[in-house]
Image (tube, rainbow, N blue to C red; front, side, top):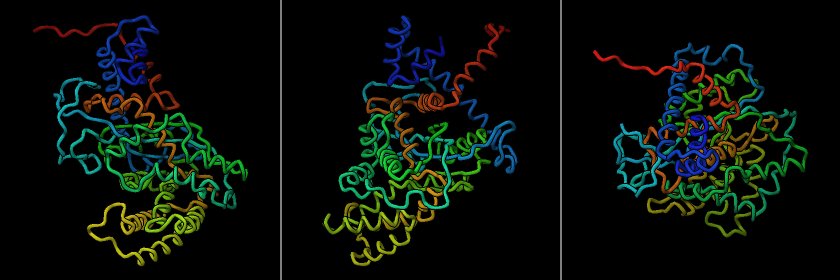
Length: 430
């Protein structure tokens, strides 16, 4: 019974809807607060198990941390991707109280917390960042030459590229990001990037990597604490001994700090769609579309071929023509847009060897983890949803368990049943 109630609490959009579904499907009258408390208690138990596993892993000698557990077979292709979502955290409740999700009137706006790292500080809002880790085993074929040397037609189609770049602005506030994610299409629909790549693959008989298994983890803890959580899961799956290894991410410094610290043996790959959005913005900055479009086509062709140095050289020349950004230039000023794009490409040029990645059968887009973020958002994110830290952490862990292919919750319930004694513990009075 508990298993079914926790399933409803984890996967319905709210505890109130979970209660309604339980009443309709199971003919049981279980209130939203009861489901909330049970879900948070089971989620906390799973978090405790996770944290214990992380502690054991981090206490291993370094050589063993880069090995694999006994009996685990390393996959041929192991891929790790990380990203951040958004969740609203309440600040008007006693932290010791077990209050998870709330749709009550919005409490007073939170002030900036100086103890929070920069990526978690959003002045005047309750939005905070949750971290999502996606670990995939994939199947793909390696090739002597680039199996798709020509840039896909969709990436040089004005209508299609305008749609892609609209969804990936080079600069946006936390509020804009939250609104974008809120209005995003359901996560079970294919990502735009995947549609483009799959369509092009059919034309040239190129087979992009296919997902075999997915394993997820999530937390509200800081990025330094998130790294060991992802590394522990990778170790249990034998990823550090995989024949081919890839680490996917967008341009966030947090992603690549985590890569350097725990996954430096993995090939770093910058999401090509983010790179394209910067190239398009720079090519059309301060120009009419008629003049900027031919420049974009040339630049994106170089980018697709992994020849990013050519793009950087022409972009630097264009920057010299426009001049360096002035202090009073806004974020959309051509000088500012061009400088931002140029810095982005220079900082990540070692992660943009896309022709080589395709030849080696590696993925080149982070749309997989972005889809995973949306699946977490379906449960924990909403303009009227406010969580305590404990409630958010519990739901994130349970959601990760539910979305993982190896069904960790099934094993948890079996352990729980095996350890049950059927007896109630009492404390004897003195």
